[in-house]
Length: 407
Image: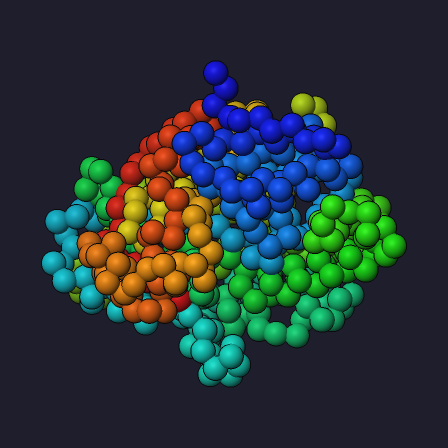
């Protein structure tokens, strides 16, 4: 029996969905079917076990295309992904009270958003540190070239958010694996500049399609055709944003590890014994079945044979370091997390602060009303998600978080 469920779509390509044992609602299925009806999809669409309804396109989907890209399928959190580093610390090296470590991380890495994102925003640098300035120096020339052609993209913060966490489901964690080793883990993307690039080109794709827009099953599936005036500009911009996101995670990881080391709460340690830095909202040029395609992974991780990836649970659940099995049916992909079981609004209406405190009692983290929408119950059970994709990845390390910083 195949591990995936195949959904045939009238007027479109099939959907191969790794959802055995995990729920997929009708709205999500309908959104996937709309995408499957686009005329440039290569063979089929793959849906991961964390699949859920998204803005523009389905979160947890793998969309291979020939000669076109759908900007909304990539989304506005371009290059969002994970980074994990194994340290030489052991669980016994951690203090009983982890508040000091959490506070040290919070001081070292700007997080959250205040002042409407303006001058006094605590989630951005007022004066970026030297490491961020140096990293921006390498990124700036290509960014400037993009802004010359599309000035709207340049109207906002850039270097000020490099090395910062953001809000929503972005987080920084200290975790312990099943053998007692301590890990540093974090989740973030390309911040405001990636959002500006994504938003701008989503609207540009709609404008470029003109009268043809009404022929789409969903206007948010507006696309840019290879060879069209704005296609190359989008590819350059999205690839740049993905590099910004990877650099952002690297800078935060370095700051986090330095903060822990200088906090005096743990003995001296080394890191980078194992290091993984992977996107899960991005587009890449790949070859599948001998065909050059653009693979858009919106909430999915590349899992070629031997690839290391990261699949996090929720604030109170396990996370996993995985190794890809190179399954061609999923276009060498796996899930990017547990996946939401309910919307943020529904979570706030469903769970109380007491529920959240009980679900995160083993974690040093925020336990206030501002993170109820991120409480563990708002997500699918990570164990079921992992079981549904056992033909896509193998588990290398199982992590449980002991400290969690949220924006």
